[in-house]
Length: 403
Image (cartoon, rainbow, N blue to C red):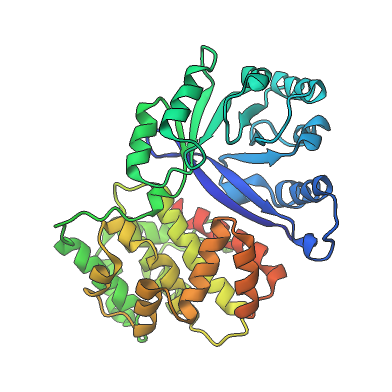
């Protein structure tokens, strides 16, 4: 039994990934509803952190992991690597002496400690003194309240992390307040710029995306396109020779690479290249999430009891962030390219079978487990296989984004 694990990015000031927060859900609770919470969490950590490995989920970045008071007192974090994790202390933890002693020992051994959903209270001062990072939830507290809490912190202050940042404006406010790290879906939400037009070069790339994701792939046309584009040719060879493929021999010919990939993989590769070009100047995580969504949708479709076109599922996932990338409403973007009605309905209206898979994937990445469970049932997807498919999608994304 795999545990549900999703990752949420944490950015630095330059919008580069600093770490991921891991969201856990123990799958065994379906069968053991009375299981003690600490035992369940320990089992999740064992399955997901030790057995799977952090690099597989977080691509070498640090992982923020929540720990209950009992797990902190038992010093469970010491089972893990101080280089890989940040120990996140939940907001309901009481600063009793045994807990403080355990946290002191972890801090002395080089573990980073973070306080979650922080609201200043005098009794929390011993934990504040130990904390390396303090997380403020911008949905729980107002800007004024957060500022007052910051003013009561010791000097030098711990590093500040703003979570639940939903808009670019909130990001800029937090930046001005002295925050160093940022967490939330502001980078995934479209910032519609009035009067902005889709550039000719972007339109050409969108037309390529439509061509490669249509019912009939013109292989000769795509081959010619790749052969005449040095950048795509270079990236294609890096991609086809990446560890994800684990081939016995290195491929050095473009034509050999295209034949080896075949139509489905060629569609994926060209979609990735085009998304990457369109997303120039945007956070790299946008491309990563688009890749995960596309691959995750495709993999879910392959095991679903529903009759569905998995190529269309991949496209729905990859295209789901086009409005964010281009700063234009999704209907305006899709009006420029001839996609199938099923794809347009899924992306614009969020209706239909394709949309149901996308909604399930987005719910998974946000840790909304009840929605995931409900949709898995409706889509006839074996729930026990879902965590492994998410991990495979992350591995694929890590591989292709690094190519």
